[in-house]
Image (cartoon, one colour):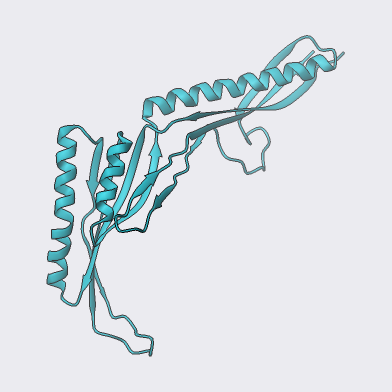
Length: 221
């Protein structure tokens, strides 16, 4: 039998428990006087910054950062179509990275009770070492799936030798198709808040899913 070209895809995925949580919160105030708004935002954000700095020094959080205060003004409209007096706004975004999810939950529960502080997204992550190690393992497994599939196809047509010709990320051997590169990683986040007298935040971080997919071309004879 003459040489036959076999083109296949291989894929694999791994599910890994998150190791870090990056929490985004913001402080925001508004009022009729610019000076008063500036003073209030400073007073609101300062304790949060001091607390995070202390946690960082004690080693109980991975890292934290705060953006510069943003200040702007506008004249809102009422429901009768009349423009009201000038209102000044100020806000600052703060990001904190936790490895201890219980400590994160406790911290955010405290944030939730303070007027003017708002909780944003929580992004679940892996450490760089874990992510790189898992991506390598998943990519290797995806190639192994492609080889196994090509070998099975070859055996079905009575070919005994399979020689790899090309291996590429998904879509690179089949030009014109829009597909995601591999490997890739994604995680979902679920946060719920009870609306009773004492707001509480409950975390249910799902596993981070790392996927890889390859296309491979083999010569079978």
